[in-house]
Image 1: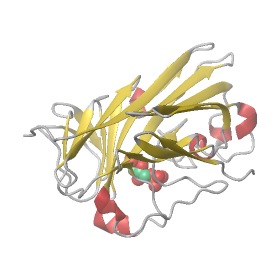
Image 2 (image 1 turned 90 degrees about the vertical axis):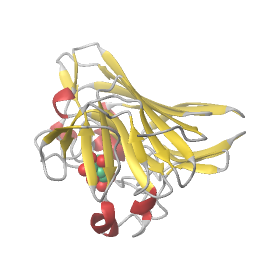
Image 3 (image 1 turned 30 degrees about the horizontal axis):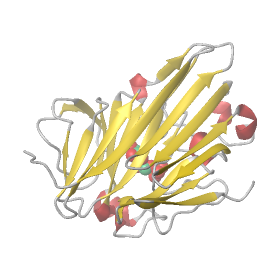
Length: 284
Ligand SMILES: O=P(O)(O)OC[C@H]1O[C@H](O)[C@H](O)[C@@H](O)[C@@H]1O
């Protein structure tokens, strides 16, 4: 396998990193503030899933709908994508990668999703960061897939953040099971792993860093909120033991019963956009 190609891109108002491996946006710093978390222990070599930034979960999410798919979050996140375009100017940059069946032929898990496809991932960073995945069905049979754009956001203290935009939506609890309805804003207390049935926008109000991050999905139906909490957080090999305190994942996706179905010749774009604003607005 080729070495991971990493792109370090300076911008007028910040900088970001991106990898051909997984077509992945890595760290992003905007106006001197880190916005996307990238673990200092992240593995980036062949087969590795890069811990942080915005991993692409595709063509399944987690262990898939049957709970038995590996690798977790699909082979798209560990594939070496082909960079097909790179546009840069001081205000913003855009990188575009493609992935075809030939590039994933030898990857574990390909046999679980053996369809003909063209996938295109576009990462654009300027005032906002946007990750867009467009999948085309190039075969003669319909197929479906799950997708999540798994943003790792930097927060000052996960115990103090308030998430708005989820009020009234139903959610599935991945920690203990069960479906619930969100009543008001969300404050995290320990391990949290939830699939909310809303595309957002979801805002993360952060009193410690004095800012609000907004995550907006396009072509998506779900928002996944994840933080491993103190116990699991200590055991994640590619994260420093206390890092769980200063990150939260707010992921735009279409998962489980909301998987995307594509007839032959059709294509679909799912995207997430992350913006940062200050000062904070009121929460309840
Ligand atoms: O450890 P990873 O495979 O990167 O997954 C990290 C997390 O991703 C998502 O947020 C899932 O909902 C979680 O269940 C999972 O633990």
